[in-house]
Length: 335
Ligand SMILES: Nc1ncnc2c1ncn2[C@@H]1O[C@H](COP(=O)(O)OP(=O)(O)OP(=O)(O)O)[C@@H](O)[C@H]1O
Ligand SMILES: [Mg+2]
Image 1: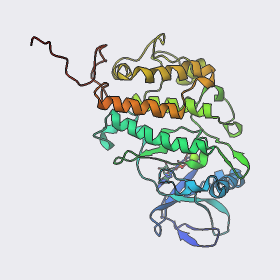
Image 2 (image 1 turned 90 degrees about the vertical axis):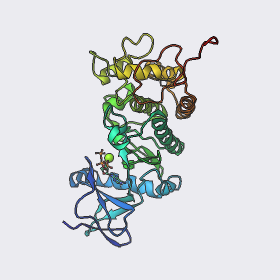
Image 3 (image 1 turned 180 degrees about the vertical axis):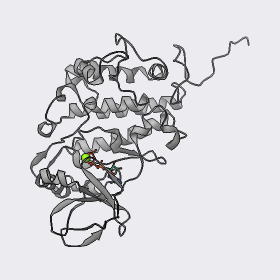
Image 4 (image 1 turned 90 degrees about the horizontal axis):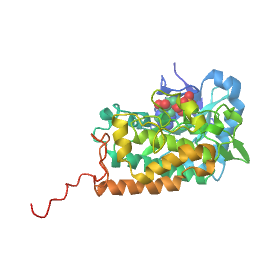
């Protein structure tokens, strides 16, 4: 089927015959005439229910002077302009075409080998730091991502950059209104948001910080969820109870690769996970902030290059207490 859409000014644009990809809400098409652009067309059943509210949000995102600059941002796919069908009905929007591999592949015990054969911890940290710098810009503009789905963070196999997609789900303050983020996987939410009607719930910087800490943990720990307790309850039940099994008194770090990785993480980093997931589960002011993560992860990266921490994705053994990275053990003077 040949799909043609129009811009507000009536320019007709032909889309690719079949979608490039689809999500739960929309299909994304290439535009042969403009290879750097894609068009997201919401599914008819989504438009039936939410056409006016979606249109209001997208157009506010495109036009609000404090946000419109994100349309040119190289690492996000901010909506650029609305598109309409031949009957002038609003159908969706155009945005920059993004490339890259989903962060779910990076945060996985096996899958990363295929796309990132040379991946090591400094590279993992470079992706996280790149994402954090984008988040800092968004937070400064009052945007809250709300939906920390790692499939929406596309990692470039060369270049260590991360491009953000599905921007229309974010919470934005634009054109004098707040548009909420209506979606999220429960296991990525802080306890205070569990069970809430997200379409009517305000996301705060603190709620972002909790979800972000889960994402960072998953990336550093081969995709393992921080609240996944061996033989215990579900991650969501553990989030509700603030039951984080790592660290002193945690009651059980899973054996094997995760145990080794956790033992090799810098103490200061582990402290922040424990703080955010235990104290921060009841008290949102006890959650590590984006600038704090940037500082901690940059330091971790520098310390790896000095040989203080293992650089491998899966260190083969737990850290010994006197271990100093890959440096050889000091030779006795008499040797
Ligand atoms: N700017 C883009 N460039 C290239 N591909 C894209 C872009 N935006 C989305 N895609 C592809 O289209 C898919 C669906 O897009 P998106 O996640 O925005 O849809 P959605 O229906 O809102 O999804 P969800 O149901 O998760 O909210 C993505 O997983 C991705 O593969
Ligand atoms: Mg979406």
